[in-house]
Length: 62
Image 1: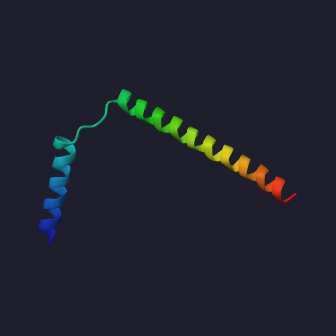
Image 2: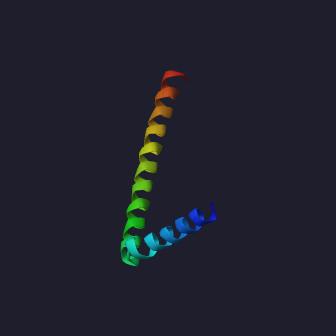
Image 3: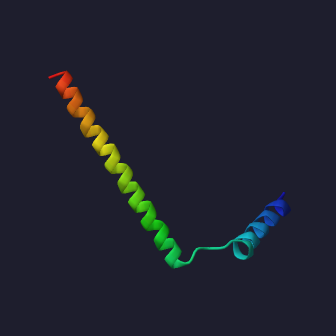
C-alpha cells in the first residue's frame, strides 16, 4: 500500500515539474485583469437587472 502512495507522489511531482507549463508573471497578470473586468461587468449587469426589477415591482405594487 505504501509503495502505491510513494509511486503516486513521485509521479505527481514528476508531472508538476517536467510536464506542466506554468504561465509567466505577465500572462498571469493579464489573466487576472481579464477575470477582474469580467467579474465587474457581470456584477454591473446583475445590479442593473435588480434595479430595473425593483422599480417595475414598485410601479406594479405601490
